[in-house]
Image 1: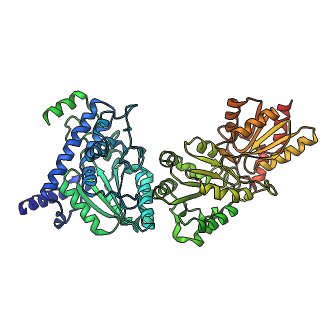
Image 2: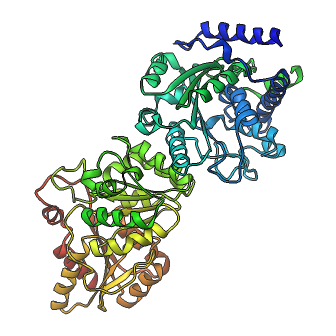
Image 3: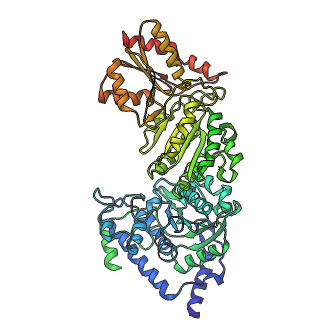
Amino acid sequence: MLKWLLTISEKLIKHSQRNIAGCLVEPMERADAKPISLEELNKLREVAERARKNVIRMLFYDQSIHVGSSLSSIEILTTLVFKYQRMAESHLDRDWLILSKGHAAPALYAVLAEKGVIKESELWKIQSIDGVLQGHPETFIPGVDMSTGSLGQGLSFGLGVAKGIKMSGRNGRVFVIMGDGEQDEGQVWESFTQKVARELDNILVFIELNGFQLDGDVESIKPKAFLQAVWRDAGWNTLSCDGHDFASIVAAIEEAQKARAPTVIFASTLRGKGFKPIENSKYQRSSPDDARKFLINA
Amino acid sequence: MREAMGKELARLGELHQDLLVLTADVGDSTRASYFREKYPERYFNVGIAEQHLVDFAAGLAAAGKKPVVVNFAMFLMRAWEQMRNTVARMNLDVKFFATHSGYSDSGDGSSHQSLEDIALTRVLPNFAVVVPADPIELVKALPEILAHRGPVYMRTGRDYSPPITAGLEYEFKLGKAQVLREGDDVSIVGAGVVLWDALLAAEELRKMGVGATVINVSTVKPMDEALIEYYARKTGRIVTVEEHSVIGGIGSAVSEVIVKRYPVPMRFVGASTFGRSAKSQRELLDYYGINSSSIVKAAMEVVG
């Protein structure tokens, strides 16, 4: 157990020194690397690996899905859905999951399929006329809390839900996942600067820093080194984590929960994580042949 | 119009405990401020941030609240995509009370005037679009609009409000049009303050021996198709009038019904380009030919 804790701490320290996408990632408290057992960690890993494979497998059925962005989100989604998201009869007492970067829908679907919310057979009908799963999330799909797809809208909506829950004196929380390219949208500024946000302790935002947007690398289009400082100065509790390392993600969420303040976690991730033909590049897709090779070797 | 809207909203706040009023820093201009004075905890000024305004309201609606977004019609158009992609797509119970529409913000000029908003909102699935004729109808309409589940766009002006429905006894129902005056030779169909000109035109036409029916389609969407068809059959000719672009607005909506159910000759009175600054809304309506003499002329063209 001690050895395991040490490993996690080392990882966190190592991570804290990395300079990702031009952002100096802030160091994280060692003491926070606590509440996950090895057993649970392994379970999350297994879920994520299956979901990752299933996203890549979806390439056989539709070659236009955003694989790169999806693979960037797998571990964060897995952690939220399998460890933190609480379900309740009332929509005001459960936790909402908003994929503001809606193009990562395949990752959401794959994780929800692992959870049993979506039938696995539906995954193979993604974007088909006779399937349920749309190219971007729609609320008629089980497990989807907001119809997204056009960037920059998830946080405004999430803040509305979180405030509505608070006004009703209920316990639900709201998780919002955004991308770094998405931060280009003016509406993001409109939303996180709103005074109401500062009074909420039931909203948790992830911003994935994978360094790429549709046409290229984030730094050459709109450098974002200022992001964390700006969110912090706007009144947000800002944390960071390695978005592919469960211990790091969990540590950050635990820290967020202690803070009792609106929190944003800057998660360093890789576009196309684990799928070599497109990993850490602007490319979203690869051939079914590449997918086949990956699945055989995996 | 804004006075009536602000006061009625503040009054209805008492009946609907879940009613919230949201604006983007135009609380005073729109008279949403009357609600703020009574219910500060249910009032949100999100700052000059219309896109956020709409999606924040959408989130509140998803959490079971009844948000009313109050803003200038023109500035809401800036958040049309949010109205489409979040509110309409999720069919959320968000109400939009758009003030300063048409030429009613006369002094500020074309940047603040709104001649496209009916076209932009009626095209959205799940949306209803309401254009009250005057403050009396607005007060009748508000409880109906709030009782309706789903997005509603209500378009009003600023101050100019001739008494169009004064003395008329009717119940306001979403999707129901009202006949303001009966005549056999032509139907004049419109909504909003321009119905005043429609009534003046009908009186002029009477003097010329032409009987005109005047129809108030305060619910532009869903349109009262049965009533429109009935009067198309009865009068055989239609003139539409609106303080809005003739492309995509009320005239277009009426013609869509007519072409489908009973085609008759039509003429369209409305705007064809941007407005400009002037001292009053009335001055602009006359300047751009959205008035009784244009309606009479159009009616005489179809009556032949």
